[in-house]
Image (cartoon, rainbow, N blue to C red; front, side, top):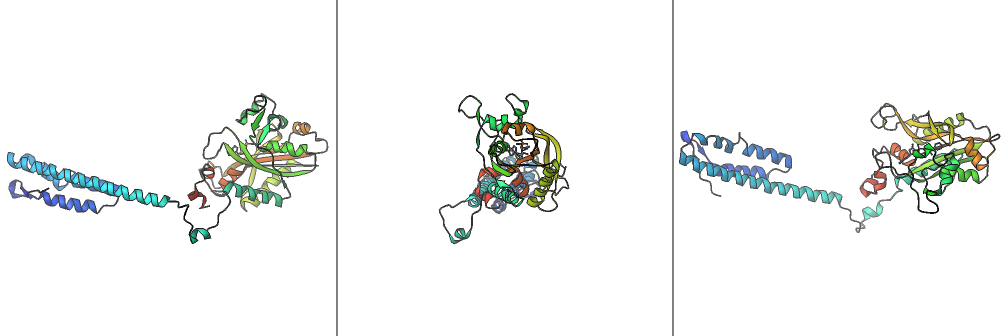
Length: 356
Ligand code: FA5
């Protein structure tokens, strides 16, 4: 659009055409949206050349005011249009960059891809590492079923029907047999019962596997997660053996400088029961947001096997005693690899997985 230079009073000229031209070259040079918004304000705001010309309109004669007013309005529209066009150009460039960064070409088999080695998923790797540590401490590895009966998951563990402790585990029941008799195990503790039922004593076993709870996923919970259970039954086993085993495991798995502590707790299948916590791997015990500034993170539960459990599987409590523990493998991976949100462990996002 052609813009005549319009004369304002006292001989000052406003060259609207030049203002538009200069504005358009400045707009074309901008490459991010924030800078574009700032430039738009400086081109159209009160302090801009157009803004100042607009404020001088009031003092002008009728004819001159009309023609300069129209020219200013035309210039404003042209500048707005150029800003809009440049905004689209910037957004399109950003979109292309984003698509390029997210591109996964699964069909392309280049030498670079051929030389990349895959690796185990992090939870599986953590489970393997934990098994190695316990095998090194003299434990056997035993697996149990994920679908359990109420007896193994609850009753044999001293949790009869309607016991208030059932509320500690929000359970997925299966439509099999009588209502609420078959379920997805809520913890690995029922495998203790299978191992003790097999009748071979003494027992030094760890039992890893998947568990299920009606838990809402969040940064520290998943509805399908993994635990590793430990069970020792022998003559003369005491709480000191339990505490020593947990401390040895903590040092062997997390490294030197990491310690464990036991705090009184309640589980129906152990007496006394404890929660065990380990030094927060993120702050090394100094206190941070992840450990709520305590320097410790809860990993699992433990305690001396309750006499009612021994009775359920027919083990003579006069001769044998034992301890058990159970903790989250996903929680362990989260701490060892400092993962703020556990949900990434199940999202299978290739970009995240290949970093680990
Ligand atoms: C139990 O499951 C007991 N069976 C542990 C036990 C075994 C106690 C033997 C005594 C003797 P709890 O519900 O606190 O306890 O779970 C133990 C650990 O499993 C938790 O500390 C956490 O690390 C992990 N865990 C529990 N629920 C979830 C979940 N929804 N997502 C991820 N990890 C979980």
